[in-house]
Amino acid sequence: MEITIVRKIRLQVDGGEPPLTITSIATDRFDLLPLTVGHAAEMAVVLADPALHAFIGGAPLDEDALRARYARLAAGSPDPAVSWLNWVIRVRGEGRLAGTVQATVEHRRAAAEVAWVVGTPWQGRGVATEAARGLVAWLRAAGVRTVVAHIHPGHAASAAVAASAGLSPTDVWQDGEIRWTTPPEPPERPERPTEAQPGDS
Image (tube, rainbow, N blue to C red; front, side):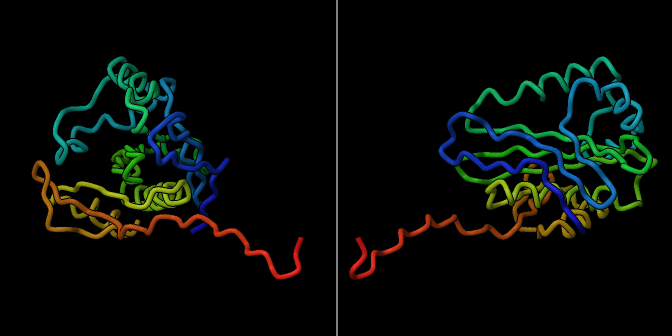
C-alpha cells in the first residue's frame, strides 16, 4: 500500500512546545484529513447508526453535539506533553467521508493510543484497515515508537484491523478491553561525529 505523508513532522520528545502538528495522509484509496468543526454535519450522518456504539457504549451525537466535540478536539490538548490528533477519512473516488481515525500521543514516552470508526455503509470495504495502516505509518514517521489500541474482545473486525496495522494482543485488560500494541522501536541514536583523519586540518 502506498502511503503519502504531506509535510513530514517530528515528535518533540521533551514534551515541550510546539505540540505534534497534524498533517494530511494519503493512502491508495483514501485521504486522511485533519478534522475540523466543518466536518460535523457530514460526520453526524456517517456516524448515525446506533450499532456503531455496540462495543464502545453511548449513542450517536447529533450535528450540534458533534460540532461542540470537534471544537474541543481541534483546540488540542491542554497538556503540551500530549497531542490530540484526529482525522476524517475521505473516500477519494466518491468525495465523501466514511469515518475517523485518531491518536493521542504522549511525547515523553513516544507512544500513541489509536482508535478508528467507520460508518456502517462503508464497512466491509477495507476502509478501517487501510486508514489504520496509514495512521500507524504516519506516527512511525513522526518518531512514535509504540502504538497501542484497546479493543473489545468481541469486536473481531476491529481486532483484524489492529493486526493488519502491525499490533498484537497482550494479556493486559483495561475497562473490559484488550490492550493491543506494536513492538516498541528502539530510540533513535544521535549521529556520531566523523572522526578527523590524521593530517586533516
